[in-house]
Image 1: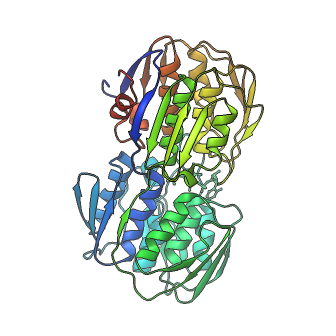
Image 2 (image 1 turned 30 degrees about the vertical axis):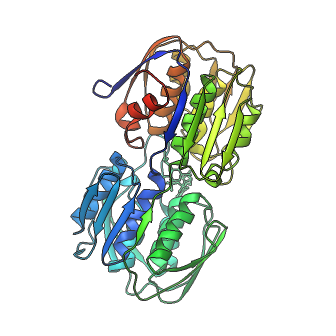
Image 3 (image 1 turned 90 degrees about the horizontal axis):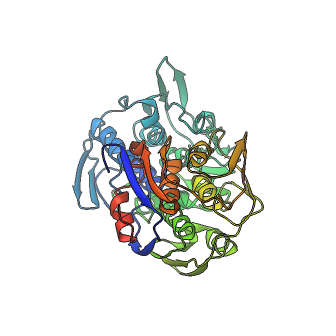
Length: 415
Ligand code: EPZ
C-alpha cells in the first residue's frame, strides 16, 4: 500500500486459510455497552480498525481507560463521568450512534454531535429517537448537537416501523437499566443484535427473544463488567468468499459462525462453488466461471445483507450471463458500478436496481473506493482483472479491515 492507495496486479487466484478478524458491527455496540457497567471489561478478538479506534477515543473522552494487549482490549469504566460525546466529524459519528442509548442509560443525559449521513445514504436516526422517547427520553435538537435527558427511563411497549439495527441496539442499551419491562416489537434480527444481547446478559441484564422480531428486556438496577469474545466479521468473510469465487480459488475461513452467514453458502453453491461448512468454519472451492443470479434483493437479516451487495455486483460482473440486483436498504449503494465500468465490466445501475451483463473480462484500471464495502469489493475485482489496478480511497477500507494486505497474503495473493 502506498499512502491511501493499494496496487494489485491480476489475475491472481485466491487460495489459503485465514482466521477472520473480529466483527466491526458487533464490536461497536458492545464497546458502547461497556458504559452501562462499572468495572474492568476484557474484550477478546476485537478488531483494531479505525471505527473502533474512534469509538475508543470517545470512551476515553467520557472518562474510561483503555488498554490493548494484541487483540485483547481492556476497558475500565469506573471513572466514567462525562455525558458529552466530543465531536468526531459526522461520518465518524455514524459508527458511535449507539453511545446515545448507553450513555443515556447510565447517566440519564447525553449530548452527541449529529451523526450525519454518509455516501451510502442519509442515515436518519428518527427510529432511534422515537424508540428512546417511548422509554421516557426527551431530546433537544441544537444546531450541531443533540441533547437527550430522562428523569427516569421506564419500560414500555416499543414499536419500530423498520427493523433498524442501530435503533434496536439503542433501545436495548437504554432499556436494560430502565424501571420495568420493555417489549421491543419489530426488532432487527442481525447476528450483531444477538451478540450485543449476549454481552449485556454477561453484564447481568435480563434480555430474551433477541434474534427474533420481539425482544423482552426486564430492567435491572445495576450492571457489572464482563469478559467477551467478539465473533469474526461475517461481512469481511463474505467479501473474501466472493473473491474466491471470482478468482476460481479455494479458501478456508476460520472462526466464522456459520449461522451468521445466513443463506450465503447456498448462494455461493448457486453460483457454482463447492461449499463445505461446519459450526465455525467454511471452505469454498470454485473451478468454473460464476453462474449468474437472475434476481437478488437486499433485506434485513436473514435476507441477503446490503453490506455484501457490492461484492456480489463485482462477482456477478464476471458471471456467464445476466444478473439483476435490487438494493432495498440504502438509497445510494451502487457507487461501485461506475468504478467497475472503468475495469471493463458491463454493469449499469439506476435508482435501486443494478444489471450485470456478465462475461466481463475485467482489466486493470485506476479506481476509487468511495465507501467501505464498495472499496473492499473493488479489491476483489482487481484480483480477477488482467493487469494492474490502483485502488485509491483506502482510508475507507481501513474503517472495517484491520490489515487487508496481511489477509490477502494469507490467502495466497501477492500484494
Ligand atoms: C448497521 O447500520 C450497520 N452499521 C451497517 O453496516 C449495515 O449496512 C446496516 O446496519 C444494515 O444492516 C453498524 O452496525 C455500525 P439501519 P444502521 O438502522 O444501524 C433507515 C457497514 O458497512 N433508518 O438498519 O445505520 C436507514 O436510512 C455499515 O458496516 C431510518 O430511516 O442501519 C437505512 O435505509 C454500513 N431511520 C435502513 O433504515 C432510522 O432511525 C437501515 O438502517 C434508522 C435507520
